[in-house]
Amino acid sequence: MEGKTREEMGKSMITETWLRKHRSLYLGATRHPFIRSIRDGNIDLSSFKTWLGQDYIFVRAFVPFVASVLTKAWKGSDDSSNDMEVILGGVAALNDEISWFKKEASKWGVQLSDIVPQKANQDYCRFLESLMSPEVEYTIAITAFWAIEAVYQESFAHCLEDGTKTPAELQETCQRWGNEGFGQYCNSLRKIADRQLEKASDDIITKAEATFLRVVEHEVEFWNMSHGGT
Ligand SMILES: Cc1ncc(CO)c(N)n1
Image (cartoon, rainbow, N blue to C red; front, side, top):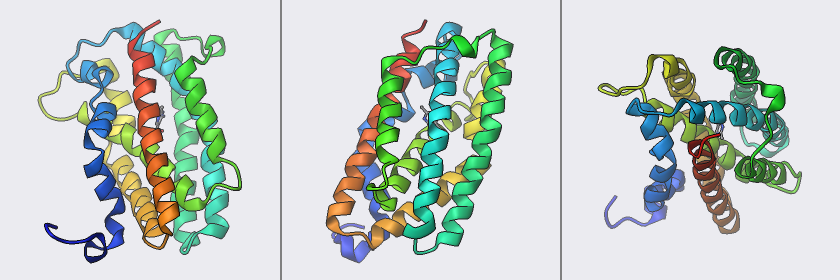
């Protein structure tokens, strides 16, 4: 890539350039102390329960967001049948995820009906809601969607690598987002985002990059909230 302009590399490398440019922030999300503590086996189980309850609330807000991305794909995509299939797969996975949260919560003695969303969660859900507006372009929304899923995929896959000390009772959680199928799904989302970005105006590309950064910041805050416990 040395010495090549973005045009020569092809604009399809846009997410790649962002990941490189914002590497330390991105690693701040995917290698967060909360994730490290799972991986090292010294996680405080009250932190895990906090995360579980808060993430259940997040996922419930995430469903209408993903549905809004699906709606935008219907008219806003160049390859809407491909994109709608990928996004619909995401909706189906979320249906399964909600059942999993309920089962997992009862296993850990977490009463989901009692959970009050904390500030970082409220802020993140409000951000999702802002992206649901019909004024927000498909390219922006699909970029956010990819980034949201990719942070979880990379974070939890990191806990499953050889030599990690992830506690047995948290393996299933890590598998949920760290498994290869979820990795493929994230790659599909990334390809869609790159394809959309390739033909986007500079203004949209700039907006999409800012959206990507905000997602990563919200993810860091979300882990911070969980890591703080209670
Ligand atoms: C906070 C958060 N980010 C991403 C995902 C992935 O679906 C999730 N479940 N929760």
